[in-house]
Length: 187
Image (spheres, rainbow, N blue to C red):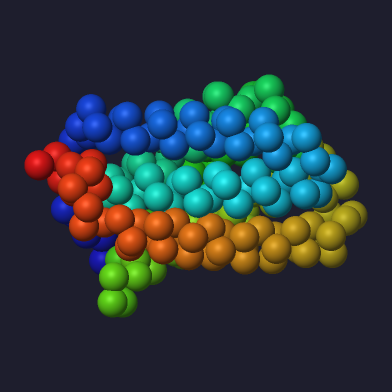
């Protein structure tokens, strides 16, 4: 069941949270790009999914994940940390953002402050990034190397779970602080 209370107008603070999170990902992706390609991919994906989860936890609005992925793809389009650059990276991130939003809108579960909708959306969006990357680069090659692609997808799924857990721990530790309440509720 879709919770219609998440369809709200964005405040300036929501845009600021998304832009700030995207800028942090730009800095961290630039840093992670100095490592070997596999480690750069894993670190950049982890940082991005942590920031995605955190931005959605703060705003709690539909479209935040898609907007974050779109802005981040534009800012990091010149960095080859995820495996593609330019317009291909934009397409891949937009598709991952759509997957996140679909899971976020459909799966409305919460167990003792743990938002399973954000957890599921982050993990599944992370899992789909290698698939989208493989299909964008070369669908024939992706099917020839299906075992490696499946391994990357499983690894990315767990990176998404870890990313959510890290962002949840940070959010949970600071959610009742004055600055976080202002960010979340505009009070």
